Image (tube, rainbow over all chains, first blue to last red; front, side, top):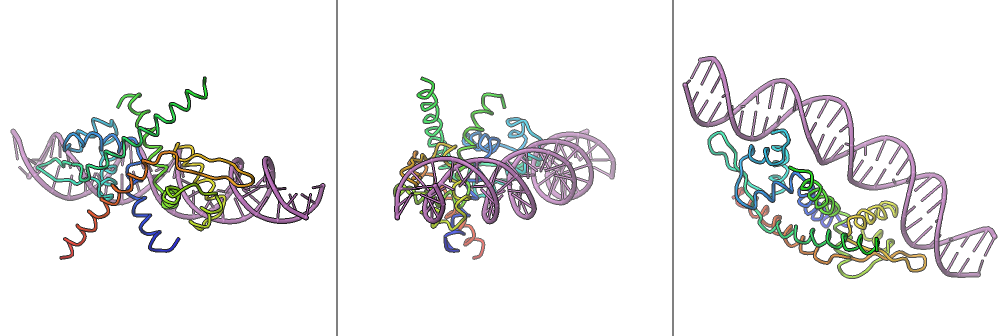
Length: 106
Length: 106
DNA sequence: TGGTTAGTTGGCGTATTCGCCAAGTAACCG
DNA sequence: CGGTTACTTGGCGAATACGCCAACTAACCA
């Protein structure tokens, strides 16, 4: 694996890794309905505000969301709507697994 | 976040996490051209055979690939072709970032 | 100005991930 | 058989990721 390829793949991996956490998936899903402030997302996931803020910075660094400060609140919104397509494929994998589990149990 | 939702999101996250590594992305990409044995993938990524084997078991546990032993070799193949669609979106994110970097430097 | 709400950042303990080596299994070959 | 190739698994040290608390900044409000 040459250097250029490795760098490119690591850039890809960083983006995908940013999506690999239940709370962040939940936030992405919520943001697909429109922008939300950090405190709304905190209520949604039920974690400490600092935890939520750090999750959002992971998503932001990955280039998946963008933020805008308005008054005392910071609103986040989805920057790349296509991430939602990820989920349909992930669901397909899960359904596959469910089908197999069923087949084995029979 | 209720229990059922959390469990479902963690299942999603586990699958996505399996994709969040440069070597595993490289293998997935290679497998999109057809099945490969572990030693071919080892040559591709240039890591220890045991490392590659563990990466493959991560992908297998996530339900993304399946394996078949033939003689002394084990062949892996992509089980869910739609994972390739992930990459087009990831590329879109990267292009977005590149565009922004350019805009900032101007 | 002092207080309150919203958010970010630093730091710490814990948990998970990563990659190698070493040891084991499994199939083939002489 | 014994040897070799192909792979898996256990384990260990190093590096990351997580989640909370505490401390800080920023904007608004009385």
